Image (cartoon, rainbow, N blue to C red; front, side, top):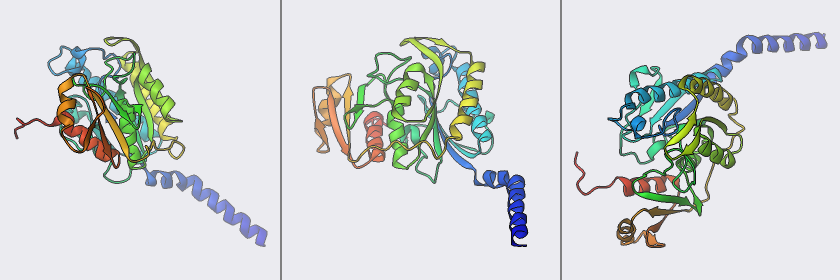
Length: 304
């Protein structure tokens, strides 16, 4: 009798799991943070695609939005139910809002303490997807390779390691114990991040030829690749670990020009390491990001 009861109990559990297991999994839902840039989009190679007023900018706003939608669709297929999207390129008002699903929250506009990762501090996230990312200023190859400001900065390093925007932003996510699950862009940034984060899903939509040239897939092909990649990436939740830098964070900033380093060195919290390089020591990446935002964004002539 005991054996029969046990068998019935196990059978009932199996039925409940078969019928309701998926419901339980769906009810959990994953919350995903998406940081979207433009230089790493399929087909993007010059300012013509990347800057307001460029002859192809409006077309590439659509491509950017569609790459985001592809990532959302793939993530949903793997159990994601909630999304926060950071519009993180240039004026940070590029994505076509009316094309997005109504359940996506969007962070847009300039002046953010956490920059391209603003919003990651608000509640729990299960993972980060980085879309349209690019190589860093210190890389010898990469389409539109730069770090935060192509007009001002030659390099940023964190605790002695040259940091791309992907590296910098992964470290911010690490402050909040959120892993980076996926990155898309050219072969250089995908290769860099694949070495940095074990298990990250990398989707290479173009191969760098030079700063302003690439061998690229078509947007339609990129959407399919990103959709499939996002589904694989979200299925890795729990296996990919957050990228966490050891505090304190020593952030070395190298400018193209002499004067910014000179003037910043007048501040007691800034050390000058060379003619164009300063160091700021922060308690964590969030603090470092705020300092970086101040350095790049402050203007004495700023107006409401």
